[in-house]
Structures are given as structure tokens and as C-alpha cells.
Image 1 (cartoon, rainbow, N blue to C red):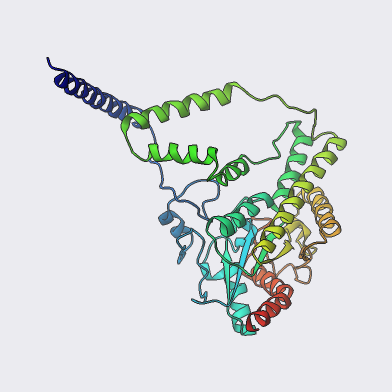
Image 2 (image 1 turned 180 degrees about the vertical axis):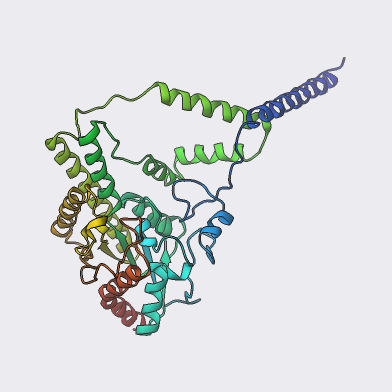
Length: 384
């Protein structure tokens, strides 16, 4: 056999071997997937996905008339095609009310946009980027993605938050005082978002290369990926990291220390949002949102045992923001509904931080009053 034939023979054997591996991997995948539920489609970002990937078709059933742009952000109904002023609205689920999702034109962003344009003759678009379950750092990451990854412009960032983190913290404290368990203060999704900004670095490049290989859809690679994922999941179950500190939510000194860390984390994230906005010629304003337990007219029958301690944490949290955050404007809305009677309820029936149409309209009016001077100044500067 000549040297050329030997090379061709070797190449043929390699190809046959690869085809056999693909065939075996295909059969393996059929076996592995036989007991798996169908996996929903994914996209780069979607404000209504909560903490799971859901297809846009499913989301549209929850919220009729929903549209998103090429970046995955909600298109606010009635937005001008050529706005003179752009507002980026961040926050968690309380910034995306009302719930249940009746219509996209009844969101806080849509109502605020309508009021600014029709009542005050402005040409404003409100970009809704709020996501359920977001705390301050994830808001910052969303703003970072908006400005740095997509190179989009805005004149003002308004954060309608302050609730998710302190509510979660208060509930953890209450649960632990009752049950004595240790709960993690930090959200694993935060680490995912940190990794997402590594594009361009070595780590980001390796992640991109890995994704590109997976996108080849070779059965062998898919089977190996599934096996590695299962091994990693088993490893996580078996290796529980030890607690680095003896901090217990049943101990008042520990609670105070953990609260201070929480406040520092949230305060720092909003300061980073301010600096990020300033670097892109955008202002930043923070709005401290109300909760059902801060409403003075809440009917006694709806008051829960946990409401008093939760209000205590909320008041401390908000007061600390007003005391220590002097670099950007803060509007305290915790008393926004105290003029209402119990019959004129502003909250959704079963939610403590979600507002109905009445509550959303009241908040939009108060937010508009707070940002109007800034917007008028922006409009004047653009005319110069």
C-alpha cells in the first residue's frame, strides 16, 4: 500500500469512527431525553421571564398585547417613534404593576409615559427594564448592559425599587427566629450576571467558544455536555460549602451585622448606577416604593403577624438611604397611599408589593411630579 493510500485509509477510518460515535451519541440522547419534559425556548433577555426561561408565546398569554424590541425590552405602548427624551425605568416586579397583567398599556411605564406626553406636552419614551425579583446590583447590571453592551442612550435612569432585598431579608429573619435555619442572603443569579459582563476577557472568550461548540448541535458534544452537567449537579449536592462565619439570624447582633452588609451592597449598587449614568450623560433618581404593610388604612383583617417587623426593617432601610445617599435625588413613596380609605385599596388582592390600576396611577403621578423639573431642564438643554 502506497503512502497516499495509507493516509486516505486513515482519514476514512477516522470519519467512520466519528460517524459511529455520532450514531451511538444519538441513541444515548434519545434514551436520556425520553423522560425529560420539553425544554422551552430561550432568548438573550426578557423582562417577564422571572427566574425561568419561558417562550414569548407563553408570556403573551399572561399579558395581551405585549411586544418586545430586538434587545428583549418591553415596548411601551404609545412610545414616540423619535423621542426627544428617553427614560430607563429599572426595578423589580413592583415597578411592573399592575398584576395580574391586564394590559401592557396599564403598566407603570406606560401610564407615566402617557402622563408626561399628554399632560405636559413632552416627547418622552419610557424604556421598561424592570424584572421580577431584581435587587439593586441586578438593576445595575441591566443598566450596564443597556449602555455598554447595546450602546443605547438615555437622559434619565429611574429606579423604582428598594423593596425586594429588604423584604427578602426581613422574611429570612422572621423565618429563622421561628425555625432556626440559615438562609443565603445572596442570589446565585447575581453571579450569573457578573459573568455576563466578562465578554472580551479570556473567561468570556472561553465561554463564547464553549457556546459556539454547543451550537454545532453534534450529538456527541450534546451527550458529553449532559453528562458533565449531571456530574456537576451531583457534585454540588455532595459538597456543601461550610459557613465561613457563625452568623445566625436568631441572634440580634448577627442580624444587625447582616443588615449593614445588605444596606452597603444596595447603596453601593445604586451609587454605581449613578456613576454609570453620569458617564453616559444620564441622570439617576431613586424612588423608595410603598408596601401593603406601610399603608396606614390597611383593613385590620388583612394585617399579618409579620407585617410589624417587616415595616420596622423597611423604615430603617429607607431612612438609611435618605441619610447616606446624598449624591442623587431620592423620593420616598412609602406614604403614597395614606390618603386613601380602606375602600379605595391601591394594592392587588394577595400581593404586598404589587399595585392595582388605582395604585399604579397614583405612583405614576407622584413619580412624574418628581422627575418633571429634570426633564424640563433636559428639554431646554436640547433646544440650545
